[in-house]
Image (cartoon, rainbow, N blue to C red; front, side, top):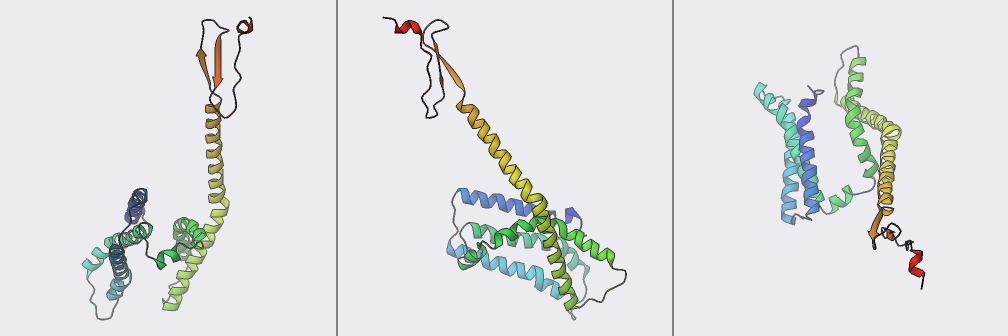
Length: 229
């Protein structure tokens, strides 16, 4: 269920919508008020904490009876609610800010880590499948073992995404920027050297040409008959 793309498509679509909305707010220079920022921050924190931590703990508590409909509703909705809460937090961060929290999130230390997020998203499933396929016996799950597995998968995913970033993403990004810059420079140079004819008198020799203004005086073609007294 986890590896199916259509099961994880809802947060991806919500993230795209949140990015477009954030760009629109930045273009219009809209800023949320301090009251709205506090309301959005509190709601995102409460909803995200409940949907990802408190509700699953209630499912596995000793006094709770298993109900299939609770899991049927939780499975498709928890990704949607979590994505909305995260988009709420990101949109307000870019259109108003959270004060000290936004200053911490805007630290330059997170810039290289942000480049690895997409690589982790692409590689962590393969790493988890390799780990599951390599185990030939059942494993007794403990909190310490589960914590080690989580941080082990995360560390391996970061390492693989770092290698992919060095070998593929960064070189291709540099090549794309240079190619785009060369194309734009070539187009700009072709516009500067374009010749526009001006017919001042009838005749072939009397036609004068000039270049598009570039800061350099153009050379005009002078009719020798005009210099005769």
